[in-house]
Length: 339
Image: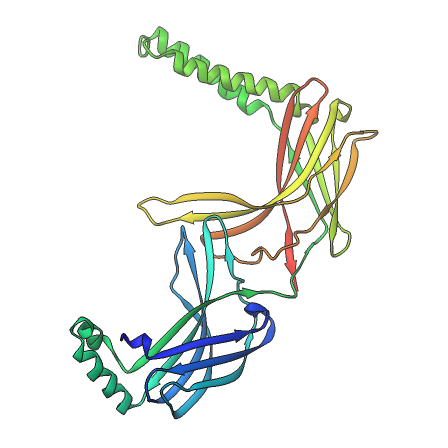
């Protein structure tokens, strides 16, 4: 029998977990497999960040469960306690990051029980190494769910401008083609000269495609306006050539951005953890149109931030034009959580 087998611990929790900003009623049920005396029994709460980035366990909360008593073998002991968990990250499993929570029960044995367990370990040759590290303390660890029951989303009214430039791809394409000619004439590259030529043609073609399509709009202004606790209003203003637009599909995404420092170099990985319902506009009587977009229905860690982890929101507009070209704009915007 290993050290952790001497004490069995069970928890009865509200809402199948704990709630932030709430007085959580917790029943701790203990079954001892031996007669055990103890000096202190403490319940602690802690979380850890796992995934592409990793952190040590952060223990936030500690309450005294019992002191200077004993448990009898086979008996069940129940303790009703209150754990108040204030602002803290929620449990979350993302694409690259997980936030996991545990409840810990730490038992500091009295000297008699410590000696008895040490003698028991010494009798089992397979557990002698445990004896060397056994300090008279027992720790039980249970994975739990931490949620926020009072969260809601909102925005502060905002105004943002996206400037469209189709000239970058054109300039890059022309530069690559000129460079290819120089390399060919100078006999620096001949055998594989088709590679940079194809790259230059690709950039040039894409630049022309954007210039006759989404590039004709020049600028797009976004104005976010608070509507209610369920939706926000997004007003979109196209600076020029709105009559060339056949349709516009509008939605937003919540992104998870993680800097992976596990290797010798850093890599930034971005993934989508939420995508809203999309709204499509098919009629354009003016250069201004607006849609109502719903907030997420589930609790997402928009307020969770570390130096190497960031969550943010991004508006997406997909345009279709009468000349059969398409284009997409992405604009970060300040969606937030409020309590």
